[in-house]
Image (tube, rainbow over the protein chains, first blue to last red):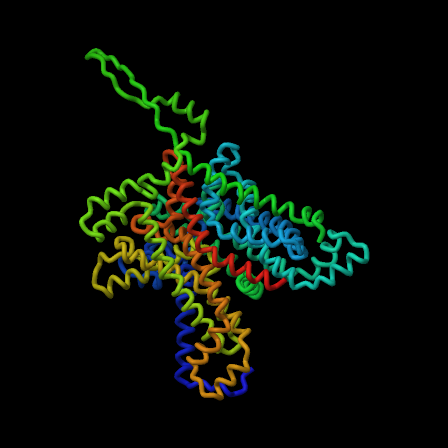
Length: 293
Length: 342
């Protein structure tokens, strides 16, 4: 909607472009650099002598004969059992996304179609729950979980992540359901559908964009979680993020640091691809959550 | 929707939230009033050819027995809240009496673990939140005036810092600013100080974590502001251009008032997020010089010898109170919105 009124001076344009370029460098360069460095040996990426080695691959050439090496990856994935962590992450993520979407759509639909006062209070409580720092919840879980002897296993973590995810999913889907006109369900109800049939056959088919957005956010929460998975899973069942932390720990000086670097790249790449494909949904989800509360 | 259908639709998610969010909060509250048992000591008489000695030992059997009977620990009331690791009321009054000046008193208070964490958490919140708002807004404004064709790709690049988990994000930065990383090494050359390292200096560590916070949170502010900018009406903007308003005046008098509600909302959300800062401290291995409230809880929970449930719970409850204070304006806003929408 530019009618030619808003003429920008050239200096402002240049400044604007420069600012964007600088910001994008700040935002993206760390990832590019880590990706590049993950194919080097430790002496190059963490060079005491000269940081330029990371680019010329001085030590990588000496140690492996080539300027790129996948040593860090094979070390982390096989020796460091990162394959197990990524398998666990897949199990956790898939279960959390599917179950929390199922529960969330049902609940949010009910909330959006209820005109009673309690629906409002439930939403307020969900908002309060959403604001709780996860670490405070974990400090509540640990003791009862030890007593019940369900600490350390994947199902517990999955259930906890589903529950933690509910408030956000509810709010997001609630704001999406609100945009679906009520007349749609009313006509179905008059035609003799039950509420569940209306939900299943009338509302769900038009709700896919919203469900995909909510699914993306559940996925990011489950995939990215550190607090819950690090404290509620035992070593054997660790997912990717706590696994990365374990590579840092005491073994930092035994060459495992490159494992951490390659693990970070391996864990981040799928996420970036996903966001690349679903960028629109991610942004619409963020703004729906923000603009509508 | 009738109450009965509502009940069945809402039951699964409601149950999940009550069981795994509501109950844990109560459980945390209960735990905070208990402390782990004191060790039961017993006297052991050991005799060898040179005579008999009486030594004091931990009675493992009795200790584990009492632990089994009362796994929660002994009742401690508000004891945990006021001990040295939390509010430290005794120490505070001591320091107050001993210190000659307010400065000295504050330095001493700043060394108590809870207050140390509180000071870091507040500093982090107070610096990061406004910077995030400002940077997010400036990025949104300047991206908004870039050709639509390449905007999608630029937005993708912009939101990258936000979508990675804080631990990974902070690690990626840490590896660069560390003494052996690309930025750290160049800083050493630039400052001509071969021993300069982010890890060894408290101020530098704080600055790094704060920069990380701005880097990580700005994309969120950007996305929301960018979406809000799309809704700014064009007519007043055009009118103001004809009236000769400068670019800055237009932003100040038309754009900002229009997106003001969103600004306050983003401010409160990022304040809440920043208040629970925790993962970057692990990512930057900054435990030595920067501790936050959430980190204190984590530290209690991963304690090697015995998990300090009571201590972690007390800190948790105080963190929840802090969050509640920040949350109140959000709740009031939601309340008003809901009232007017109906």
